[in-house]
Length: 253
Image 1 (tube, rainbow, N blue to C red):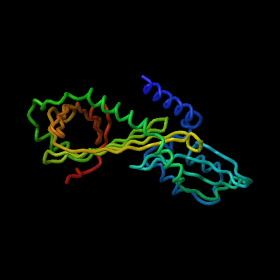
Image 2 (cartoon, rainbow, N blue to C red):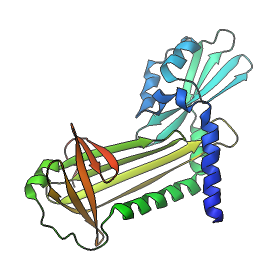
Image 3 (cartoon, rainbow, N blue to C red):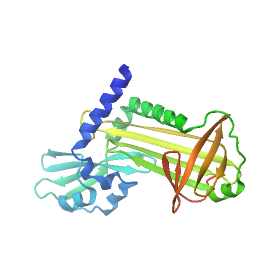
């Protein structure tokens, strides 16, 4: 019970910290928003930078410099604190760089939240799963050929969390999966925190149903789980409650 209360307070703290700027910085929450820095140029007015990146998470005056921080998303890494330095007098951009120290501090302080999130994901997977028994249906070879390939999923939340998942359904009946989650909050403050976790696995898969919907069974380490799938068009696929996009040929090894 104490642990649940601790997690609740942590998430409440994150929500309060992000309320001031998260909704005005939607462009920085997009996948690989770190690439927006390629459009920065020395001498850019602060107003143009805000148009490009949205409102910053924090700002501070430091003598003749005005420093603003944005959290920019980078694939397979998470949200990166980026500090932009402006001239205090005319608010023209002087320099910009990743704050690696702040990022490391974020990663070091979020272990509790990351662990709890993994437990929640495991519980959801168990809920969607049919259990540990072998799937009681024959594999549809035509559907296996249709759905073979790599699928990618990215989700983010207004409280500084993001998850990336990738699964490859191989034509030989094997599958390979990888995932990464990162959570951060309070960038630029003494209470900044963050962490990342990675996972992955592999095994075998089979499928039954139609091209529109059906069931996929995956077996890994002797345990079989079944998931409902449904096509959402144009390479879009729901696997359980998670939405995936087709990402090319299956990466099999």
